[in-house]
Every structure is written in structure tokens, then in C-alpha cells.
Length: 215
Ligand SMILES: Nc1ncnc2c1ncn2[C@@H]1O[C@H](COP(=O)(O)OP(=O)(O)OP(=O)(O)O)[C@@H](O)[C@H]1O
Image 1 (cartoon, protein in one colour):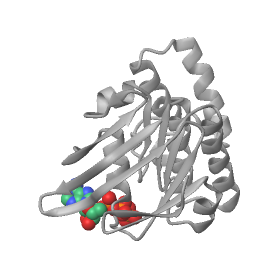
Image 2: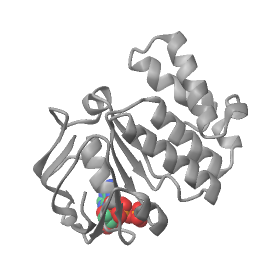
Image 3: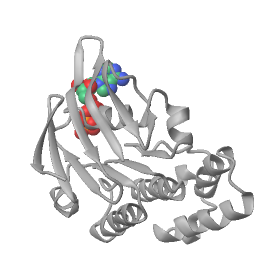
Image 4: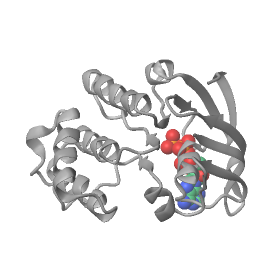
């Protein structure tokens, strides 16, 4: 369960997230849309512990989120906009390293990594350096890395923006599967079809959140 209570995120005088509250229960997908600069990424970063909240609290399954390492260890997975991959490592290494760093068993990690790469249609591309892959392929590697972590909260920031319709459907199905397996999922998106497919849909504008379709 993601519980966001009255959070505000500011960069100096600029209020990016303005007194936002909502819950996402396990098993549900919330889409957050809104114009560029509306505060969607800042909202996801706050839930991930990657940016401090000025006021309010974020809680995920009993942990009050205050910093990224503890949130990551607790299973709050962020699939960042612009993918956040290490470009000079292979696709496989980008998936493997965070899992090993979190103390997962190496043999089990290998199985999980290959499964995740196959799930995004990149079973044959594990040995490729990220910088050799197309933008859409990199985006799929980032999704694979996110789902391989089997988080209790999955925050996908524009994770379908560079994908063709087949791969968009594939990624949406994978995020839905994360929810079906008990994760609370939030997708920030500009794509109306992604928003329509989600269980709930909220819009951000100048940091304020309003509901199109409540969870
Ligand atoms: N690190 C930062 N320092 C200062 N201002 C920032 C920072 N990150 C974001 N902002 C500003 O905060 C506001 C919200 O940005 P944010 O990236 O959260 O919006 P967004 O809705 O995700 O936009 P987009 O759809 O373009 O990704 C914008 O005005 C942006 O310029």
C-alpha cells in the first residue's frame, strides 16, 4: 500500500507537488497524467525517497519513506524517466547489479534476469552495451530492471514513451502483472491509452492532483 498524505515538494521557491494525498492499495495501477512540468516525476521521486518532501508523509507498507536506499531496500522500485541505466554496462549487467547489491542469491538472480529480459522481448540482447541499444530498447531494459526487482511498489515514469504499440502493450501487461502479484503501481504518462487502461487516473497540474477516475 502506497499512502501519500498531504505531501509538498519544492525546489527553492518552485512548488512542484502541492499538498497531494492519495492511496494506492496492492494490486492496483494508478495512472498520473498532466502537462510537462506538472510535477509527475517529482511526485514519483518523493514516493521513491529520491527527493525530500517539504511537508506531509509517504508510507509504503509500514515504512515511512525518507531516503532512497531504505526505500529501495524495502522494495520501492523506481523506473525513471530517461531510463537511468549505466550506458557502458551491458543490459544484463544493468539488471544483475542491483539484485546482487540487495543481497539476492546469484543463481536465482541469473534466472530472474533472463526471465525479465525475455519478458520485454530482449532475450537476445543481454550482452549488448546499453549505449548500443535504441532508445526504445533501452526503455525496455529499464522496465526489465524494474520488474526483476519484484517490488511492493513500482513507480514507472513515462516508461512507454518511446515504444511502438506492441511493446507498449507488452510493458503495460508487465506492470499489470506486477500489480496482480501484489504490488501497488503508479505510472506517470502522457499517453491517454495508458491512462485508460489503469484502474484509476489522476491528473496533475501545477503540482495539484485531481481525479479523473478514482481508485
Ligand atoms: N531538480 C530540480 N531542481 C529545480 N527544479 C526542478 C527540479 N526537478 C524538477 N524541477 C521543476 O519542477 C517542476 C515539476 O517538474 P517534474 O519533472 O516533476 O514535472 P513532470 O510533470 O514530470 O514533467 P514532464 O512531463 O516534462 O516529465 C518543473 O517546473 C521543473 O522544472
